[in-house]
Length: 81
View 1 (cartoon, rainbow, N blue to C red):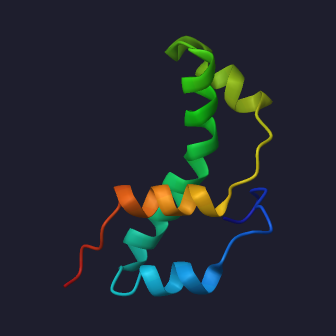
View 2 (cartoon, rainbow, N blue to C red):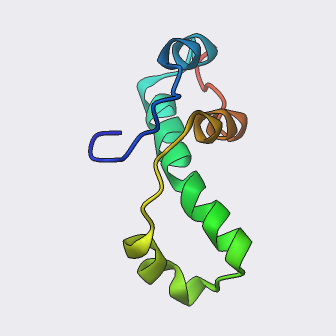
View 3 (cartoon, rainbow, N blue to C red):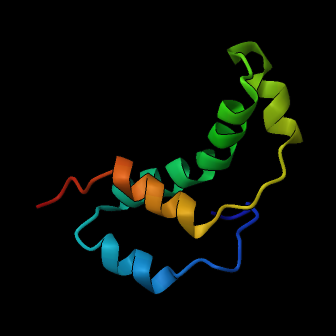
């Protein structure tokens, strides 16, 4: 998450508890997925096509929120039993 703008509402302890059993790669995937959530919301809200994504990515300035982490954890499950 280094270098990304993060909202103050992030409950790191909750994330740690919810990701118990996740490998380092799993955690990396959760963080990457959470970081992409603001861009996906913007694309969906504005009906932007794939060719405009790179330009939009340069323009977007939305911090990653706790909601983004929750959504990411729904999409990424642990790979270690």
